[in-house]
Image (tube, rainbow, N blue to C red; front, side, top):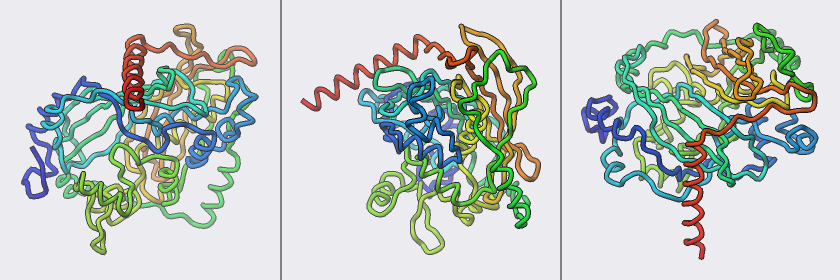
Length: 423
């Protein structure tokens, strides 16, 4: 097993690592991570929305939300990704954890998209918990870095009432660090540069955008082939990356954004997540997202965004189109190319299906993000529950019985342990 930088297999995908990883498939455990938000407030929702460029009053104005069909301000459903309270309860077997602790040590990891299914809205005062586990693994040959491993990790999120709010299946791709660096596939990419006149056009386009808001989009009025109004994102700046962290992303499970004594403790716990900067100071490996020299060390010509940031952006485009009374049932996305500092994205889409299922009035959207080079950098399909009568809200999907039962069991165990430890 790759375990240290002195090991010749450090940063290399080995057969031994692959076999050890298989032992984790299908094993659920409590998620003890504390995300940036553990309990949701109206301010947290507002700050998250504004940090991804979404000024919809449903998310940003508590008084506005009270007048909607939800009777409350609600969060963009994809905010579920950055909310978590430590869940008390059983973790995986200690021997299994010890055996698999060094799997794929030093390999390059990219989040390449994922799939969300949502069941309930998030409102101020909600606290989210989750259980998690590896769901599947596939070994592939990668253009970027030789052999790669595609792993789907499932998070089941539920609130303080043990109601399942959402399920996230995150796809992460691991590749050989050395192969990725030496191959240099992206070294000749022409990075974004803009004239003052082009920047003026960006702002003119931004000022034309607006969410559908209180103007209901009724299912009966939607047709297959309808276009989704496009939105812009970019040119990507370091401020965009910083605001993604201000929104709450990047804290758990690795806490890659730490400083001073906290960072020292993290380095002692996971030293491979840090490497020296140009002045010799140890800094987080996550700085590939804002430090161009660090990005070049892993084979990229420039710093680049987090994959989840484009998931946030794709959701923003869907939310703008659907109106305040709709509910996103699911969204599946793929991150296909890097989004470098200076890159701009145009996000657009269309209605590809209209149907009824399980008592819900549904439409499927197909979305895509295209950069200034004409490259498709991300895609998504989203299923929306729309109202079909004035003043109503889109109906909520039924929670699968197996997930409902598991969430209830985990919450019961959590409450029992909490009570016993607090007298």
